[in-house]
Amino acid sequence: MARGRSLFLCLALALLAGCAPGGPIIQETDGAAEIPAENLIAITFDDGPRRETTERLLDGLLERGVPATFFLIGRQIAGSEDLIQRMAAEGHQIGSHTWSHVRLLGVSQDTLRDEVGRTQAALEELLGPGDYWLRPPYGAVDEADRTLIQVPMIKWSIDPRDWESLDAEKVKAAVLKDARPGQIILLHDIYDSSVDAALSIVDALKAEGYRFVTVEELLQSGGIQPEAGVLYCSADG
Ligand code: NI
Image 1 (cartoon, rainbow, N blue to C red):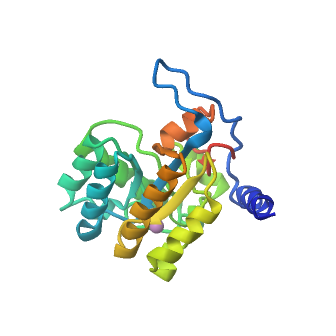
Image 2 (image 1 turned 180 degrees about the horizontal axis):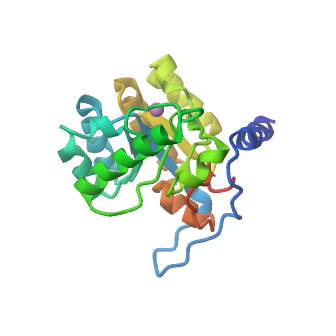
Image 3 (image 1 turned 30 degrees about the vertical axis):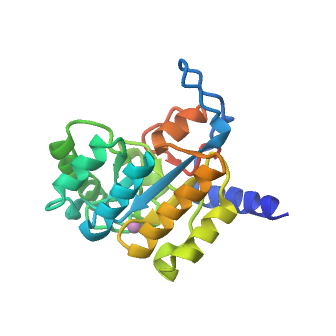
């Protein structure tokens, strides 16, 4: 019952958000390290970096050998270069959350280009050339503007609204209730309670047999070839 309802909500959300449908989850078969794709899940963090909390999160993820995906606010890059280089060195995926966390719905195309372009340039300067995927703030971008986005866009499929409760136990319970293979969890690494929740969620889901991967790896495991300007919510839709 609960599973059916959450599937329905996810599908409804995907339709509203215009998420791209993915293929079936397939099994990775590259070499000896064969991973049952049905156990994969991704944890993502928005609105950072924030030294006081992000550093502790990185310590906890390193201790657990768990990669995550970080969508950074461009104007917060300066002063946290060492943290971001550490993220990259420790195998986390790094993406953009626009320069100043603007809602992209309804903004001018110049603003959109500026918000996305400045962040991309700052990340390239710090980490080198690459595709820094975009998570649009509030998960939305105008349909007509999608052609301006040069990278794949990532939404989420599990949102415990950690910023609202600031309660690690509630956040953990909300995520565990909805956790399913192929899903993308949304948290914010700017709150102590969310760091506590994240590490506790990682421990609980690992104990259940889940394996954490980056968003890019998760989509690959679902047989998805991510395309620029397309919004993805999970490995299956
Ligand atoms: Ni945000």
